[in-house]
Length: 136
Image (cartoon, rainbow, N blue to C red):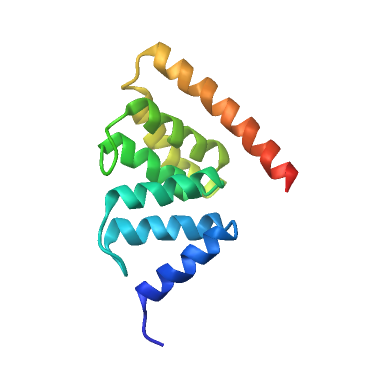
């Protein structure tokens, strides 16, 4: 069966409406690369954020990259650190080396006060995420 990215996008949108974090990640990739949809970094960022909030660590990592580079979003090292740290905390062992490298690179660019505030925000986000997960 030939690949049909436009059809895949349609199904991924249905899947994320059903709560599939992974579908949101793949939508982000589709918009980032212009596969089945026009390339649109802002739309990519929107899907990565939605998937990241649902717990997809790859989407969280991509958000960290987006904010670090300012691609589709304003460059923001605090926000980049936040998403990179969340991905690191939630990631599988096999992912952590990649996630830690980005997180630590970003942390080196942040003033101590901003880093501390971002770390506190991460702890609160993780706590809230666990509560949401327990309610399902």
